[in-house]
Structure formats: C-alpha cells, structure tokens
Length: 421
Ligand code: HAM
Image 1 (cartoon, rainbow, N blue to C red):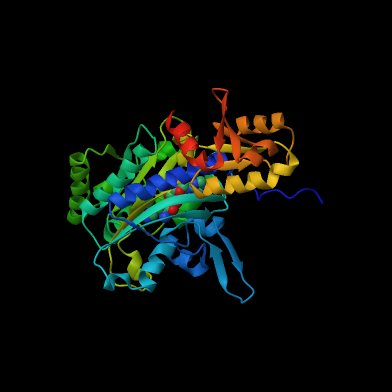
Image 2 (cartoon, rainbow, N blue to C red; image 1 turned 135 degrees about the horizontal axis):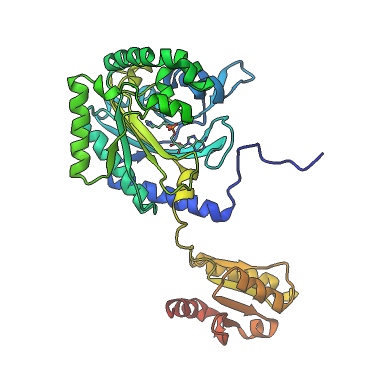
C-alpha cells in the first residue's frame, strides 16, 4: 500500500502555521472580549436537516458541497459547512432568550465544504465567527462590523473596506426577484451555463457570478436597493450613518449577494485587495438573518453575524512576532549524566522556563549544534565532575561565555542572564 495522504483539499497545519492560526484566534478572543462577546462551541456534526432548512435547498452548499452521511443508527448527519446554523440551533435548544435579551457569541473551528480546491479554497477550512441575537436595530450591525474591522486591523490587514448591501425584508426580495427574472429571462442566451441554471433555482445568485459574460448582463440589471421599503431603507441608512460616525471604511455594493438563503436586510463582505487571495477574494462574509431563529423553532428574534475564513486571513495578514522559543538547552556531557540532566530540566520547567534536552545523547558538539538550531540562548552542561561538586556549566551561546554555577543558584543565574538582554 502506498503511504496514506491527507484527504484532497484538507491540510495539516505544521507548527509555524499553527502558531499563526493560534495567534489570530487569541487576538480574535481578545477583541471579542472588548465587545463583550462570549465563546460558544458547537458540535462539528449536526443533523443534515438543520443545514437544508437554514442555508437553503437550492444553494450550492446544500446542493453540491456538503459532506453528508447516514450513521450506523440510520441518522442523516452532515459535517458542518458553516457555523451559524449550529449556533442558532444551540440558541434555540437552550432557550437563551429566557436568560438575557441580547446575546453575543463568538465561535471558531473547522468547517467542511466539498468545493473544488484552489488557493484560499479548501474542503476543510476554519472560521472565526460572531453572532449577535436580540437587537433589530442598525447600530447592532454597526457595532458588529466595527468589531470585525478592528480585529482585521489588529490581525495585520492594513487595507480593510466593508462592502455593504441590503436585501430588504421578504416583501422587497419577492418584488426584486420578480423584476430580476423579468430582466434576465430575455437575456438568458447571453448568460453562462451556470447562471442559466441558477436563473430557475436561485436567480439572485446570478448577480454573484464572476463569469465575464454574466458580469456584462448584470451591470444593467435592476438593483435591489431600488426595491427596499421605507423601513428597510431607514435600516440601511442608519447603518451607513453609524459606520461613518465610527469611521469604519465602507462602500455600498448593490450587486452584493451571498450564497446562503437565511439573510435579510444587511449583507456585508470584506475582500482582500492586494490579489493575495486570487479569485477567492472574500476573507469575511456576514449579514442579518432576522427570520432564522423562528424557522428553527424559537421566538421571532433578530440576529446578525459574520464569519472570517482563517486560512484566507493567514494569506492576507503577516505572520506574528516569533514566539520566545527555548530558554535553556540542557546537555548531558556523557551517558552517565543523562538522567540527572533530565532531573535538572524538570526543575527548570517547574520554574516556567522552556527547556529542551537531547536525551538520545551524542557528542557535546552535536548537542550544542542542536541547542543552536532550536534558538536556545543558554546551555547547561551537565558533566560527572561538575555533578560530584554540585555545580553545572552555564554557557551563553550567543556571547560564547561560560561560567560555573552551583545547582541551588541555577534559577537565579538563569533569570539574571535572561534579564541581561
Ligand atoms: P460564508 O461567506 O459562506 O458565510 O463563509 C464565510 C467565510 O469563510 C468566507 O468569506 C471565506 O473567507 C471562508 N470560506 C468559505 N468557504 C471556504 C473554503 N472552501 N475554503 C476556505 N475558506 C472558506 C458563512 O459561512 C456564514 N455562516 C457567515 C455568517 C455568520 N453570516 C451570519 N453569521
């Protein structure tokens, strides 16, 4: 059998990239704390029906991309393709509205979509998400978007602009859908095969097509923003005014639509602008979904949220400052000192220091080379003669200095060396 490989479109994160991912996750938690969001974790697997009902039957995700299976108990299950559906399920299942009028949650973790793999598009990817329940007003959207932009900036993305649109309520969407189909139908032959198919199933998605022939037709299509009723319009205007006041860069993009059916009113996206993401340029998508909690069996509850693609963010944001690394490398000069070297290493770890040893042994030279490679500043040389006298050699690997230190004075000596730089 040939050596097993990771599933196509699913990737290992080796330690350098894991460090970047963990740093971004920590920054996300920190920004969310300032906005009073708490973290929730939901299962990776949910009933298939949950995603069909929330994301929508005729979306690409549900039609083509879900990892669905029937388990040994005959339950129809799916690896979550996104986070909102599970978070809403949890909100309803735990009747969270009975405990607080407004709920602010963040979440992070792996999502699964069987898409065609490309740069920035994977079959297992990770999202950093936020959902805010219970506040229908445009200032909730603005507060959430402000948190998003603050995080992206603190993550190191220099040039952030939010693209905004409003899909209106159900009434505006119905009227718009009708007008759009009326406009597109006579132009059907000019559309791509994909868009011709979507025209029947989900015409708003034609607006989202990247095919040049579709872009040309769409450029003159009716705009959803002309179909908003007075309340929808006031909501959008309120959001834009709030973003202006909060100095959040934003732009109205009336052709913006998204690939999930649960949205109404506010939609937004943040795209990479330097070409780092290629065609997969959305680093974050979000919007309002005022009807979804009720669809899932809860009371009517307005909600708004977003999710950031962690891998795409890692393509856009520079890596974080390198971690402090190994403080001390403990070298056993000979085989007889290996156990005592391990004991010294353990004592120093108990002090909170990062300590590495090479208990395979090897020559002094090869161990010092390894100490250098792991970036240790200090090496402790543990030899039999020194052990007998209750001392070790403490070597500063950068300065090349070495001195003898009593075992009981070791901690203080290391602390002094560390604070000397
Ligand atoms: P979405 O636009 O489907 O929205 O995904 C959000 C983000 O996840 C995208 O902007 C992208 O960065 C990342 N993403 C999506 N698919 C992939 C993929 N195959 N590979 C890599 N990254 C990907 C949602 O998922 C909604 N739940 C967002 C939301 C939360 N709306 C309201 N609340």
